[in-house]
Length: 147
Image 1 (spheres, rainbow, N blue to C red):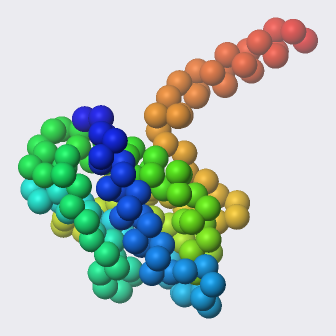
Image 2: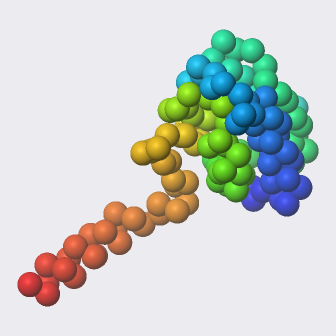
């Protein structure tokens, strides 16, 4: 499933609502993770804090009754893309660093770590990492041959 433009807009709006709860001008909150839970039946995307208190919710229309095998992979990719596009807002939230965004299913099972906000750590989408091992091996081999 490829995320539609509407799905990306709805997800970006959702992330904006989360960020609005932690404006950069306020004293930093002690929070280690923001949990995103997605429900394949209802299409709901809900954000929770560490204490399982709801921060905000939204319905992503493309995800309603979506039973595709790659649903969580596609949702992960779409949310990561939106978090990256809102990087300045996400990293400016009034939460003590490091903190992360984690995707969970409706049973609260961890699906993926979406984004880590820390000065030294970055999580890169797996699509960007495809064939990285081969590229690095080819690069190393070419360097060794020139010596």
